Structures are given as C-alpha cells and as structure tokens.
Image 1 (cartoon, helix red, strand yellow):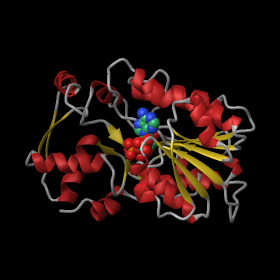
Image 2: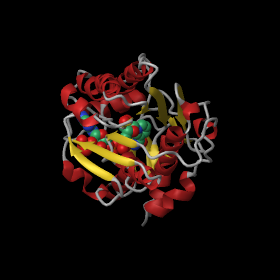
Image 3: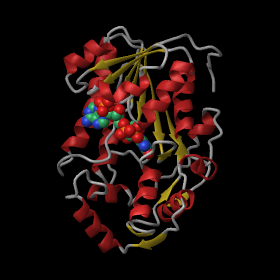
Length: 309
Ligand SMILES: NC(=O)c1ccc[n+]([C@@H]2O[C@H](COP(=O)([O-])OP(=O)(O)OC[C@H]3O[C@@H](n4cnc5c(N)ncnc54)[C@H](OP(=O)(O)O)[C@@H]3O)[C@@H](O)[C@H]2O)c1
C-alpha cells in the first residue's frame, strides 16, 4: 500500500449497482468515511434501506441509456460500478454482454465526460474473454474496457471469489434448499473449488483502493483465507443452519442435464451458464487482500452469525 491517505478527502461518488448485496455493505462503508454518495438505481424502492446513510442520495436512472448515464454522473469525481447478473433472460449471451461489457464501456465514457478521476470496477475471479461461460466472458470484456480508459480516469479492478455475509444469495440459498429438501441435495460440480470472501472485506478493499492512489491501474483478486469445494460449502451451510446435508455429487452428464432443466425454471436458480462457470475453480494465487493490507475473515467464523438454525 503506497500513497494511502490517512484521512481521505470526502469524494462525491456515484454507485451503479449500489442497492444490492455488496452495494449495501459498500455504501455503508463509504458513508462512514464521510463520502457523498449518489446511488443510481432502476427502481428507487430498492434503495429505501440506504436512505438513512448520511450523505446518500438515491437517483432513478437507466444506466444503459448513455445520455441518462452521463447526466447521472455529472459532478461526481468517483464512479463505482457494481452492476452484475448471474443469469440472463435468454440464452444468447446478449443479456450478459449488456449488463457487464457494454455497461462497463458506457460507464468509462460517462465518467470521462463527467470529469471523474477515479473508477472502481467490480469484476469477478475467473473473468476472462476466453472463459467457459457468458458470465466470465462478459466480465472479461468489461475489464478490457476499463483498462482502456484514458489515464485521467484512474481505474482499479476488484475480482472477488464468491462473497458471503448477511443477505448473501450463495450460502443462504443452499441453507434454504437444504431445509426444503430435508438435507438431500444432488449437486453439480461438487468438486469445484472456491475461496469465499466476506462482504465486509470486499467493502474494505474498495474503500482502501479509493484511499490509495497506488492502486490505480491495478487489479486485485479477493479471496478468503480458506479454500472449499462446493460440496463442502453446502455441508457448511447445512451445519450453520441446522440441517444435516447429504450431498449427492452428480456425474458430469447429469450435472449438464440438471442445468438444462433448470434453464427453464422461472428465475433460473441454476443454469447452463452457471454450470459452465463452475468448470473452472474460483481460486487465485494473487492475494489481493494482503496487497491491500486486509486480513480476510473466515467463513467458519462469520457463517454462524447470519446462518442460524
Ligand atoms: N455476490 C457474489 O458472490 C459475487 C462474487 C463475485 C463478483 N460479484 C460481482 O459483484 C457485483 C455485485 O454483486 P451482488 O451480489 O451485490 O449483486 P446483487 O445483490 O444482485 O446486486 C446487483 C446490483 O446491480 C444492479 N443491476 C442488476 N442487474 C442490472 C441490469 N441489468 N442493469 C442495471 N443494473 C442492474 C441492481 O441495481 P437496481 O436493481 O437497483 O437497478 C443491483 O443493485 C456484481 O458485479 C457481481 O458480478 C459478486
């Protein structure tokens, strides 16, 4: 960590995707540092829980409309883009491209037009243009757009593994599924490996990146202290929430079939694209948390505090 401001000057920060799971933690963290926040959302009701934050203002905006996005960013010196989807409506990859790649390109252009000097971009571990899923490919293209930003817009990219914490969809979903299925769960890619990172550490990583000009032009993989297989994570979710889990690892043909069927379940709780993302481990040799001076919390310690019986 070089160039760290002990008391960072208050910034005027626009947050895209600030109403979600990570955004909620990050908005609270940035507000505590005294920054002024402009929370862009497609539906202001989703930001009701954030209105109490000091210095936070909620703004309805269609972030995909380039002119509207430029207007929404006017007067902001910092832009944080957290927008992300795990599944799209169709199957073509178009929804992922719009939500990740194209929005990243538009965000860079609008931030430059607004005269912003900092862009913090949320990517994902494994993001790569040649990745196995539309999710990872579109996140990879988004990173390329961010890296191509003009030097006046100092960018930093954060790339977490799966994120856990109160309100997460990952551990909570498995805990809920286990309750419904009386603990029996046929699981695709049960051997896929993850390094779950706590949402508080992810928010801290963003806050530190913002306070440290030395992070400009750099990417940080964010991993928790332990690596778990997906099967082990499901068993932990069961243990924390009081349902003994019996994980039935599916052979690959059955996993692909399960994904094909779930593609047509409303809300796509699992999909072929998710299955493809799971064909690569979600772990990294880059210790971005350590590079930012963060000692990440462990899922074993935090899990029981929000996944209860
Ligand atoms: N959660 C994880 O385990 C994890 C792991 C790695 C990376 N990430 C990345 O972290 C970011 C935040 O994740 P999260 O878990 O906080 O997600 P989340 O709770 O689903 O929140 C997503 C946010 O993005 C906005 N959004 C969603 N779809 C959009 C669309 N089509 N157009 C415009 N805005 C849209 C939503 O804003 P409104 O509805 O208010 O407009 C919402 O605030 C994402 O980029 C995700 O890929 C998450």
